Length: 170
Image (cartoon, rainbow, N blue to C red; front, side):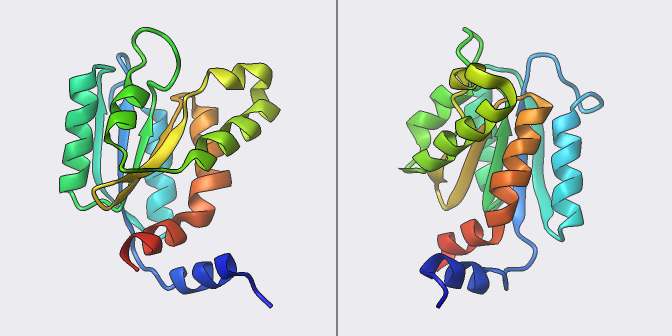
């Protein structure tokens, strides 16, 4: 007998073309050097989904919050932030999102750090990767390293993407 989660995944698999947003938080990246944005865009579109909003913002609280609001206005059901999740003075993404999330998904950050530990050791504890729901969208926030973005997408977000999107509208 299948579990409730399996039944949800099966029903959610009927989801077509999920609208996603990509927000890179960086003081140095440009559209030409944003390998995370390019990687996510390619993965999203090759899976039959679409990117409805993409931007790069400086690691300034006002810019992060503005990008979040623009992504919500774009009707994205899943919003992917990368960058600004560490503990340096300039890292503000987590702080902005923590104030906005209506429901948190603590398991995302916990599992991300566990999987990241296998790659980077104890440095994984410096990550403030987080996820939750805000105004009808699921928000994921990961560190800005390409390995971190790839790990989160391939091992955590993509396998459950239809499930996340379906849970929001059921």
